[in-house]
Image 1 (cartoon, helix red, strand yellow):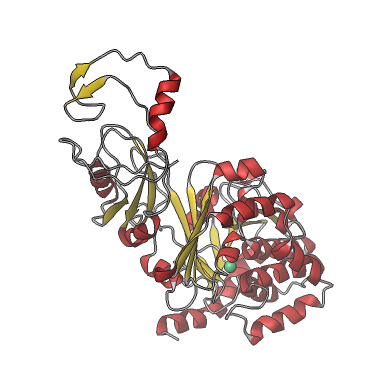
Image 2 (image 1 turned 60 degrees about the vertical axis):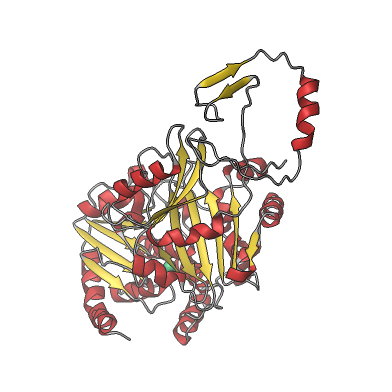
Amino acid sequence: MTGWSELRDNGLDTELDRAADAIGGAREVALACHVNPDGDALGSMLALHHVLRAAGIRSVASFSEPFVTGPHYRLLPGLDLLTRPSDFPAEPEVMVAFDVSSLQRLGDLAGSAKAAGELVIIDHHLSNDAFGSINIIEPDAAASAVPVRRLIGRLGLPLNRDAAVCLYAALICDTGRFQYSTTTPAVFELARELVAFDVPVAELSRTLFEEHRFAYLRLLSEVLGRAELYSADRFVWTVVTQDDLQRHDVSLEEVEGLIDVVRGTQEAEVACVLKEAPDGTWRVSLRSLGEIDVRRVAESEGAAGTATPPGSRRTIRSTWSSPASGHSSDLRGRGAAVTSDGLVVVDKPAGMTSHDVVARLRRAYGQRRVGHAGTLDPDATGVLLVGLGRLTRLLRYLQDTTKTYRGVVVFGIATDTLDASGAVLEQHPMPLTEEQVRGATRRFVGSIHQVPRWSRRSRSVAAVCTR
Ligand SMILES: [Mn+2]
């Protein structure tokens, strides 16, 4: 244990007392958890909500847009008691943030946190930057539910059944049903106390971990069908697009557990799932077994971009976690100044080289290490995957995968650069029929080996045609 951690542990008692005083003396307490809440965030927040309500202390509970929770959380009592983020107090007297490692993780509610008279942070992330006025941070705890239970005790308020169900759900979500290495005797002691409150153990386990709509199984078969394993690098990954989700009528929240299927790959140490959100941003789930500790990488790096760079409509948000501890670490930065590691999916316009894109992102992020996966000619438009900082290392895993190119062919024109943007040297009318074109293109279908031919301007005319 480091001196830093000991100091924090020693301070915990005082912080619990200060939080209990603030909450006990408030006219209303505003509770919030992180964006896209997981079981620990939701369960921890709702547990205190239930306890305060039962004691006649006014409280509101919410989280940022998108204000939706996955169907697997439906057995958590109190989802109907949540307040929309738009109705959350702008300047709460006392605000409590659950399972939130940085201000950014509050999303739309970050403004309320800044304006709060007293901001209590309850968390167990090692990376927590203690941004509250009162910080109850217990890095050794298996879940935020643990310090929440302590706080309830310090408030002198009794647990009730609804609160116990919520805390139990939080505990099993963050320990993977008592299987991660964070599952200590203290975890079982808390579980023992909670289960005495008539917690529906089997139903919670099934709804939180096992049950899915049949549509999800269909989607899963497609997504797993396209998973790729890089045996030499011990890396496995797959991708879920908005198109997949829409065709199968499955929500983004429903595919939260997909990473746990992918990480079961025996031949891989690191598993990755890319998920496309409705707004075109990407969420990256990374899990590691063995020696590659993605959580430590995340914490030492402290950041990944959520900012949208100029000229790009897409960003990637990253969540890193290690199943060994079940402890997920958010990789997003603490502010605009720290957003220099990440993956950016650029929709490259015509006229820019891949190098131009890299130069522009380098300036925009003040990050020297910028690399791209694959190359797009100046005339080509579309997806160019760019890595910033440490995440440039991921690029080699991503660039050998299948790509699709769409092209338009104009017959009868010859240019000095061999591409569409060159000066036209010759032009002949070519009244071709569809049959003639089909007949002539038949020999281009399939796998073709071709010696690259260098054009004067782009210097990169290499083609492999597949269908
Ligand atoms: Mn947690």
